[in-house]
Image (tube, rainbow, N blue to C red; front, side):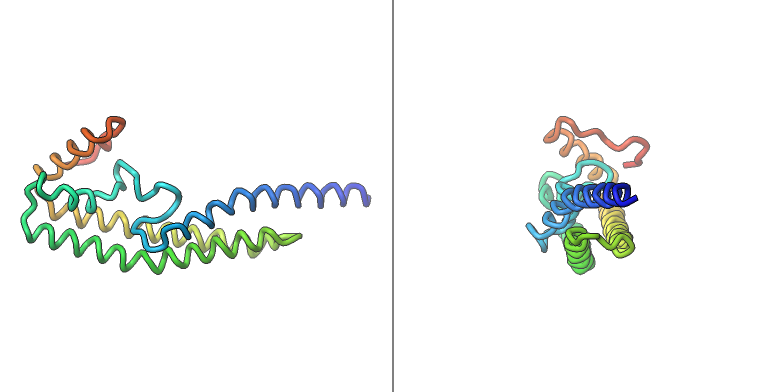
Amino acid sequence: MRKVQGFLLGGTALALSMISASLIPMAAYGQANPGEPGAGPPRMHRMIGVEAPWVSIALRHQKDLSLSQDQVATLEKIRTQFRDQSTPIQEQLRAIESDLAASLQETPANLIQAKLKIEQAEKLRSQLRYLRVEALENGKSVLTAQQRDQLKNLVASRHPGFKKPQGQPS
């Protein structure tokens, strides 16, 4: 009986240490650029596709897109609002991921607490994703259909692997 318990305890400890080792980089990524908009899993802010940082890209190419001063001001306001809303959430997420990584280093790990931390982290990621989608939709409404098409073509020409999202209106 003791051998079985020892085996199960050892197996559990090994599994938890493997899980915690895989989570440590996740906790560390957020500390590299704490104030960076769209910070999330590695390279999330560099995504090209439906949730790409279109507002920032449009602002970088404002001359190519012939954006008016009003459009530029509105897009900058959208980007600033996204940063202001997402920064505290990103900080909370980093803290939770750090707490989770630390608690998984304990032997034995508190699985109930780990589950709660994971659920909290996912809720925050969901909030960040919604804020990103909201900012993108607000940004799209500022551009004309021609400017949106021009922006997609501009990105596609600079990123050969880029595929325009299927079924997405301009």
